[in-house]
Amino acid sequence: MPSAIVSDATTSLDGTALASASTSKYKTTSVDQGPTPYQFDLGLLTSINPNPLTSTSSPYLLSRARDGVQSLVNKIFALPITRDPENGPLATLPAFTSKLPREKSMPKPKPMTKWEKFAKQKGIQSKKKDKMVFDEATKEWVPRWGYKGANKDAEDQWIHELKNNGNTDFDPAKTAKKERLAKQAKNEKQRLGNLARAAAASTASSSSSNKGGLGDANAAKLARAAAREKRKAELEADVLRSRASTASMGKFDKTLKGEHKQKGLKRKFDANEKDVGKERESNLALLEKLGTAKMRKNAKLAEGQGDRELVNARKAVQFATGGHGVTSMGARGARKGGRK
Image 1: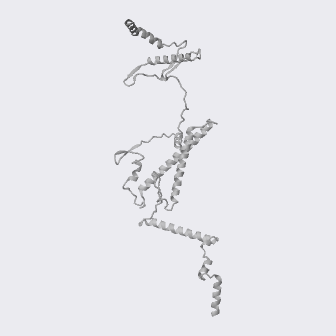
Image 2 (image 1 turned 90 degrees about the vertical axis):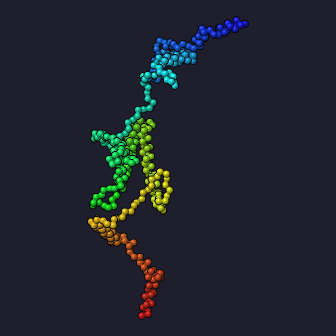
Image 3 (image 1 turned 180 degrees about the vertical axis):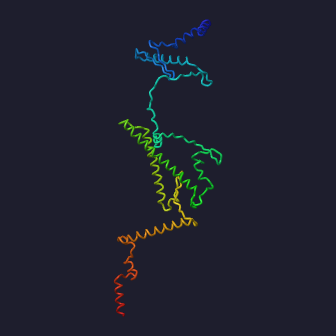
C-alpha cells in the first residue's frame, strides 16, 4: 500500500501529465484562416472572415466565431503594449480604416440673419468686438456690456456737463438709460425676427425637399422657439394690463418671484424759472389750442350737433315754479292781473 501511494503521488506530480492535460483542455492560439485570409480593422476591433459557410450547425458556427476572435486577439497582442500601474498592460489601437455610414444626416449650416445677408451682398467684413474694454478713468479692464459694463458709464456718472441754453429738466442719466433700454428692445425684436425668418425658410426648404416626410427637426425647433418668445411677450403685456385694471392701478398687487417692477407715468412739471422765449411759445400754443376748441364748439352748434351745450328748458321751468310746471306759471299770471 505505501508503494502504491508513492506511485500515485509520483503520477500526480508528473509535469508531463499536467502539460498534456492542459493541452487537451485548451485549443491552440494559431488559427487556420482558410483559403482567403481574414480582414482586420483593429481600430474598430473587427475581424472579418470572407470565406463562405460550409454548414449551419451550431458547433461549426461557434468554432468559426472562436477562430475570428482568437485571430483578433493575436493581432492585438502584436501591437505596441505599454504598462500602466493601475490597469496593467495596454495596447495602443491604430486609427480605423473602415468607412461607416452616418446614423444621422449632416448638420445643416446655421441660417444667416438679415444683417449677415446684407453684409455678404455688400462685401462687408464684420469684425467681432472684444468682450473687455479698457476704462481710462479707472485704468482697469471692464466688460463692454452687462454688469458694471462700459455701456453704463453715462448712467453711473455723478456729474454731467450741460449746455448753457439746454433745458433745465434734462437728465442725462435717465436719457442714457432710456436709450440703452430702447437699443435692447430693438435688438430683441430683431432677434425674434431673425428666428421667425429662419424658421420660415427652413420649413419651406424642408417641405420642398422632403415631400410627404416628417420635415426638418431644426426648422420645427426654431419655429417653436419663435412662437414661445412671442407668446411670452404677449403674456407679459396681458399681465401689465391686468395690473393696471385694479383699484390701486397695480401698486398694492402681489408680484411674482423675479418679476420686474412696473413703471408708471411720471408727471412732469415746468420749471419755475425758464427762458422767456420758451415761455412765450408755450403760452401761444395754449391760446391756439383754446381758439381751436372754441371754433370746434361753434361749428357743432352751427351744424345742430351742439344740443348738449344748450340749456335744458324743462329743468329751468321746474326750478322757477318750484316743481309745479308750466300751467302754474299761467295761473300766477292770471292772479296777478286780477289783483290789478
